[in-house]
Length: 154
Image 1 (cartoon, helix red, strand yellow):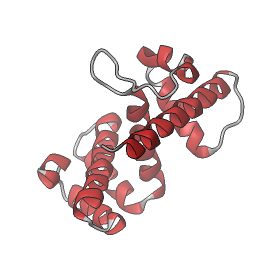
Image 2 (cartoon, helix red, strand yellow):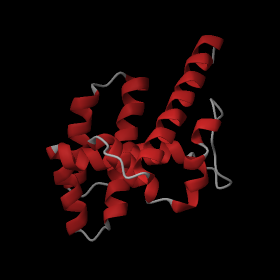
Image 3 (cartoon, helix red, strand yellow):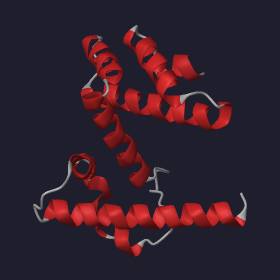
Image 4 (cartoon, one colour):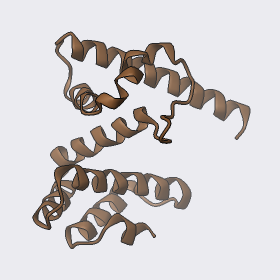
C-alpha cells in the first residue's frame, strides 16, 4: 500500500473512532440520535464486552483496533448496523432475512448472513468490477431461495 493510501485509511479510522465516541456518549446521555446513529448505538450497546473500546474511542486516534480475539469491534458494529438497515430498508434483503428466519435461523444469524452478503458484494465490486446494487439484489434472491453466503461466494 502506498503512503497516500495509508494516510487516507489512517484518517478514516480516526474519524470513525471519533464518530463512535460521539454516538456512544449521546446514547449514554439519552440524547436524540438519527436513525443510522441509533442503529449504531444499539449495536454498540449489544456488545458490552467492548464497552471499554466505546468509552475510549476518542483517545484511539488512527490506531487499528483489534480485540485479543482478533475482532475489530468498530468494523463489526458497522457491518451489523448496516445489515440491520438493509433488513429494514431494502425489500430484497428483507425477503432474504424472512426466508432465513422461516428456515429457523435466529435474528443474529440471519443478520450476520445479510452482513456477509454486503461484504462479499463490496469485495466483488472492488476486485471484479461488478455493479454492487445489481449484484446485491442477485445475492439476496439466492439467499431467499436458501443459498448461504458461503455457497454464493466460495
